[in-house]
Image (cartoon, rainbow, N blue to C red):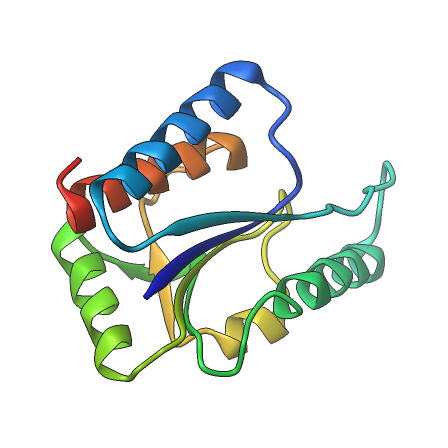
Length: 154
């Protein structure tokens, strides 16, 4: 079963991008299963944007995310209000997805303003990595490190 890491926006910093590419190569080398990074374009956020504009931006980004998810995918959304867990639980979620014959195990990282309600509703599981806030670029590295450690022992 393939793993898809679906994210909003591109990583601009070379040091993050290099680490992400290195971890993806390591995971793909360590396993018969593949991991794919899918970056959907982020929306421009105007200065002093109100709630209605922010909601509209989240909805646009959400539609792009949902377009990358198949109906048989097992979806885990990273959310502030998700369940805090450990690496063992991520492996259990992966096994659960395999047992449901999911076509892929999708991990979703939203943009700087979070995920749309539609994406959160589509999720089979809401996951929180920490009470702390991380830059979205760093979260990709962190999540790939967790995947490497918990699923592949790389």
